Structure formats: C-alpha cells, structure tokens
Image (cartoon, rainbow, N blue to C red; front, side, top):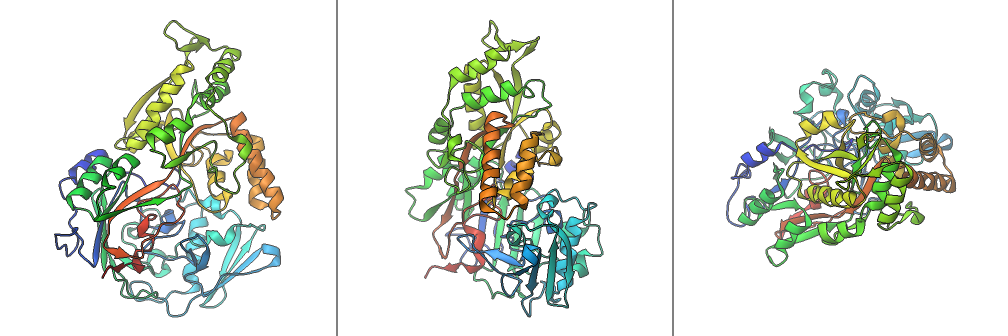
Length: 529
C-alpha cells in the first residue's frame, strides 16, 4: 500500500469468493484448476484501474501493455516497443526512440509514435488524476518524428530517465476520445501486450487471454486468472485444495507447503518495506521527540526473525541494507534507554499507568493496518509492544482501505512502500514536501527543507558522487528527524504448482502479486514434459 499501490478488496468480498468463486477458463479439474494451458493465481488485491494513464503498470510487467523499454530478470533495460535503447543527445536532455515495426494493438490497429506522444502528454496533463506524475517531472516535451520515431526533450538531464520509459503505451484512437479519469478504457483496456482482459468481476477475479496480435509470439499459457482473495489464510486454503495453481503468501503460510513435492516456493528479494507513518499533524506523532523515541524503541531484528521467519531484513530507512545506495552508518539497534531519555528531555512524563503525558496530552495514538493482512497485523502489534516499553500507547486497529484513507492525514498507518531501480523512484514521492497528502504520496506529510533540497540534487545531478552524498543526507535526516518508523524489508514468497518451466523472480518493488511475482514473464512459460 502506497502512492502507487494496488488496493486490496474489502474483506467481505474476499470471504465471498473463498468457496470457489474462481474456476479457471476451460478448467479441467485434477492437477490444479488451470490445466496445462491456463493458470489460476491467488493474489491479495486488485487494481483500482487498468489504465496506464492513471498509473497502472507504470513500473512495467503489465501483461496487457508494453512500454518503449522493459526489464529482464536482472532488471536490465532492454527494448520492447522500441527497436533499441534510446539515442541520448544534448548532454542528456534528448532521448530518441525508434519504434519496432509491425506492432499492433489487440484490436488490430497499428502502433504509431502518436500513441506514445498521447500517452505521455495525457499523464503530464494536470487534469489527469495520476499521482505518479512527479516521476516525469524532467519531461519538457515529447513529439513524434514521423510514424516510427519519438523524441523526448528534458528540462534537465535526468540520470534515470530511460528507466521511466517502461511506462505502458495506450492507443490514442480509443483512449483519446474519452475522459482519462472516468472513461471506459479504465476497465476495458486495449494494449500491445501478450494478453487481453477477457473479464473483470470486481472484488472477485480478472481473467486474461492470449493476444492474437502480440508482436512477441504466441504464449503457451493461453489464459490466466487472478483470483482476488484479500485474506492470507483463505488464499492458502484454496491453494491447498487445488482451487488455485499458485498464490502469494506470507512466510508462515508459505512454510506449510515446504514438504509438498507437487509445488515449489519462490523467494523474491525486494525493495518492499513496512513502516509506520507518523503524521506531523497528529497531536502526538507531530512531536519530533515521540517520533525519535519510537525509532529507538523498535526491535527490527526481532520482527525479521519472529514475524518474517527470517525472510527479510531490518529496515533502517527506505533503502534495503544490501542496496548500493544504502548509507551503512545509519544501522542501529533497539535502544529503550535512549528512547526514554529522548522523551524525558522533551517533557513527556510517565504517569501512573506507565504511559507518558505532556501538557495534558497522553502519549497515545491509533495505528491502523489493512484487514486480512496478517504480516502487517503482526508488525503493528510488535510495534505497539515495543512502544509501550518506552511509555507510548499505540492502539492497533484493523480496517478496510475505505476507512483508513480519510484518516491518513492524522492517524498512523502500517504502510508498505518501495520501488526498484534508481533511488529517486521511491524516495521523492515518499518524502518531498510538495507531495504531502497527494493520494498515497508522502503519507506522513513529511516536511524537511534539507531533505527536499537533497531530493532535488539526487534527481537533477549527473555526478554519481554528488548524488550519493545527497542520498546519504536523506537517510541520515530520517534518523534525526523521522517521519516514518522503518521496520523491515520483506521478501515476497510465492507457492505454485510445479507444472511449468521458465519461472523466475526479479528484484521486486512493494507492488507485487498482481504484476510482480514468478508470473512476471508468464508469456514465456512452457508446460513441463
């Protein structure tokens, strides 16, 4: 859950489908519902929209759409709709792409440069409700150079721009006649990808079928279904019963399949972190001393060991400890004595019930987590236990996102974020003050001028040393002036029937299950002989 999150269905909807709402297209029973040519996968959430104009698929791996570029298993950029990687000119201010010949949308119409121009210009239009627009801040203009060439002109050299052109391309001849915010394209998409949407039963499942016009060749998997099952236990039960061919699962439930020879578990390393947002507008969380004390009180290593069963890393900031941009000096152990000293110095005095107070305000606040998410629930409860030892009362509550969203400005949330690739991709939207409260951007309403300046330097500089210094500054600032309590970076675990070849995982962002996962390259799978 984050700015670009795929939002979970309500718990009631998840339970409603728990008794077998997802039978695969052409399901044959027996060894998994899907048979050799179709696959049924259980995921925790569904998209709000399938339109890239509103943010769907912006980091790649959409099965309906393609970008100019894509990523391989090692996240290396490679051509997709473009014939080759871009030609870069004018000191990094122009990027020129030449389109692949013979590409058609799933309705049979040809892809042209005008479709690319339309896609980017619509996303950049302030009237379009795309909360990831700031990621394209560097773009000054985009124009077509004939039917097969697209030229981007940037306001400033942006080191990571090519990686932003994995953005899916939409057909102007369909989407151009609609309001991008409300048009039917949001639920009836047409793209150039290997699959098309066959049916979307909201809160239940999405079914995809092979695109006969796909430029990359015919997939062996002819159809696949994403069953929307918000509750972790229900997903595991349906996988065990054979109703699903695969599912994303938390560590404790994935472990129950370790002795099942008919299934394989896939462990994907990630940038996905769990953190508690601490809104600066809150009467308690608005106090920097409270935020610093919570940072010192939390036992991150215990969360990794006990909640994740070792499938993750302690999170000392937004970047994982094995990332090349991670600032090693920020690592810190639980220090309850320091937490208490910070609160004492700030005037938070311990009351008779063990909870501190200052000027009549108890050190107490509510922490929400999304219903049905056992991993977040366990993080929230452990966080509350650690906080209480410092004299801070954290009241943990579960709720649907419909309940949580209006409260995010003042109440804490057990949130998930993280983007792969360049550090600018995840940190700018997480921290920049200009994005405070912009959807799921900067949920904590964090406002630190030094961090804003460093984010700008990291985004605009071409000097690797200058960029590293900027991101070091940001990571240290989040220790001294935290807006979030960073808890863990979690591995993503998937369990699938062992009936196909070609399954791999990538280094994954927060957003997973629907696009990321062993099915990121499902169009290349082949049935086992």
